[in-house]
Amino acid sequence: MSVRTVTGPRVLVLGIGNLVMSDDGVGVKVVQQLQREYRFAENVEIMDGGTLGLDLLPELEGIDHLIVVDAVETGREPGTCVRLAGEELPIALETKVSAHQMGLKDLLSVARLLGHSPAEMVLIGVQPGSIEMDTELTPEVAAVLQVLVDNVLNELVNIGVSCTRREV
Image: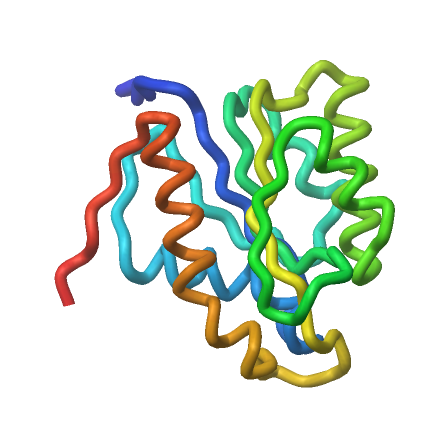
């Protein structure tokens, strides 16, 4: 029996949202693109969290860096990208875009109470244009999908994580 040793900080990139509610699914679409187009070090997990909320609690155990990708209500123009970190996260989640966002707030609170809160948390987000029933992103959010992917990749580089582009 072999034991796999993971070197470096444990990183979770968590895309959340609902793919049938237009821009609400942007976080999931970003992580799907990352999974398709890049290879990551073994200490990095790229996860489609969908709308799971508290069911994601075990995934936070032992995580040093959490990068959440989601639609977030900022009051700005649709398609405006944001980076929120640390204590900005709970404040940003006060104005929920959809039901899963309340689940994210609860998830982070319970993780903190259980001592599973990641040392560093960042939200890479975008102001949605619509969260109505639709499987397509609005043009404003679709136009910044690659920007969101690049923002996640930059976060990973900043914490010392290596990734390589897959050959097509």
